Amino acid sequence: MSVLVVKNRRVKGALVHELVRGGVVVLVLRSGPWPDCELLERMELYDSLKASIDKDKCDGCGECLKACTKGAITENFRVVEGLCEGCPSCFYVCHTNAIKFKQVKGAEYEVYSCGKGGLVRLETVPGAREDVYVRSLIGVARKLAEDKDSPLLVESPSFLPLGAKKALLLSDGSPISAKIAEELTEKGIEVLVLGETWDTDEVISWLRE
Amino acid sequence: MVKRIAVVGDRGVGKTAVALELAKALNITLLEAKESFLELHYMIQGKRIKLRDFVGFYPEVDKERCLRCNICAAVCPDRAMIRDWEGYPYALPELCSACTSCFRACPEGALKPSENVVAEVWEIRGRPRVVQATGRSLKAVVKEINEEWVMDTDRPELGLFSDVVLILYDDEESKRYAIKLKKFYEDNDLPALLLGNKGYGSPSVPRSVPPDVRVVLALLENF
Image 1: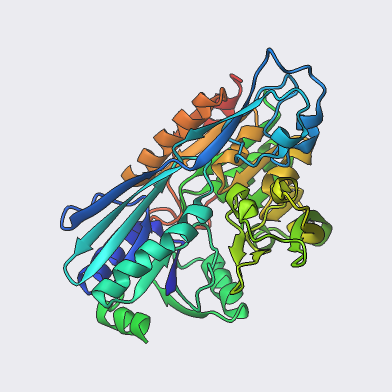
Image 2: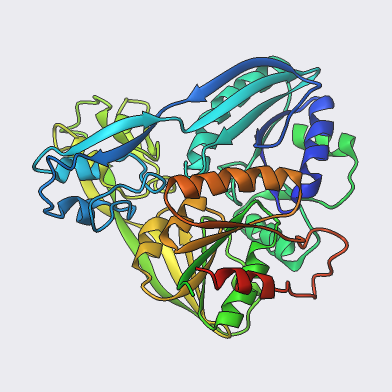
């Protein structure tokens, strides 16, 4: 598995399109639609929990406010849903049993077959932990890559290497892109830097190695 | 005029450049909160010092008490708990955000807290003054910074700690994302401004020209 680190988003779509047609399986974030590909599967992931406080039961002791490591509970005991990650910290400290959880949609993903290659497209709900969903979908993408006998490329949320040994960096030519390459190399990751143009066959053989 | 402004948006829309110019114009702290790659120390002159490590508690398993019931993995919101070849759980420190859910969930009390750095906070004494936060537990860090700031972040949820959010976009794809973000902030009762920006990746905008933030400042006057 290799990671795709995107600093120059403008060429990402074109690169992913070419790689997929050339026989690579890519786990891609948000981009699309992909009309040339055949949709195999679409799933919604409803595994994200959000806490809420029952006003009738709450006596305002403030223990939940102290326990929450995400800063998701306000002074007047309301849960800011965008900040809540559904860990039961507040639930365990509440002595009046006022905390309830509900399940909300965290992400959706689609699996596509595109000739020799394939795609897994992930779109998370804003505020959901993108990296957690990417990590949990690597298995799905790996299975597709095995079926296709293709190398696997996973787009990284922010600049996390996700445990890969190789990184494909889409550079915008700025000094910051060079620093990203440097930091990845320091972590022992082999980096291939791509600018505005590239030789798709070369990139694919580098991914296969 | 608002005190805390978050600048968010897709990658490469110019968040950092706009946030930098805003912080200069308003003469307040620039807060860079990113999970994995900080860049302002490459852009701003000034002495850089580490303010602190943000330490959280990360679970260590006592194998003599553990029943291998897997409840700790089920409650973990970071999905940081995986199992070794004997079926005992262990937490990956790079995923754990130290919410301590697992300690409370364990029916046998088999998890012992061990210290783990979940975020680092740095300061650059330059103009503007910069505070940089990086790591797994940025919410806890940002919540504690009680001053006026302009925040440059790639995590949209951190925008919820601000008084107003500025969402940048530069093309169709980033605009779609920006509209989704706007809805997210409105659902959480926070005002959000959409702003088309010529990102630094486009060839027509040379990198040496800083973005003009006068329009943004005029918009912010209304809050």
